[in-house]
Length: 109
Image (cartoon, rainbow, N blue to C red; front, side):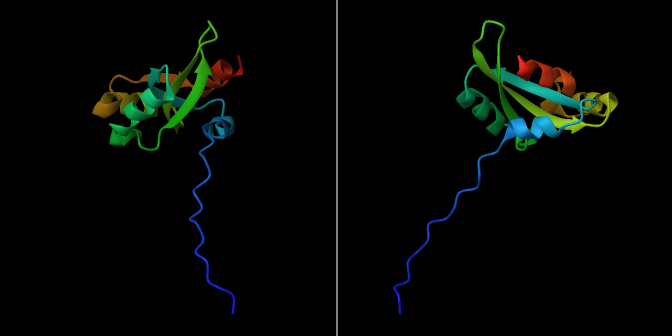
């Protein structure tokens, strides 16, 4: 009988937030909650708000070419749905509304 070996747990595959964005309809809406220069900063911000637990972090670039990270939730089917969250959810009060097509355009540059 061969010896029993313990198998190492397999970590979940890394989240592909860019693939998530690519699947969104161009007519949809998202909320952007923050923008930080480093992934560490944005992950810390995300970890402090339960409302952002499932938010997506995307890496993008400034016009200068410098990289930075944005935190998004959504998609929301209508602009009104997203605006209502800004008005009714305290964690989202300082968020700003973005069209999915504007995020996609930003990441194509």
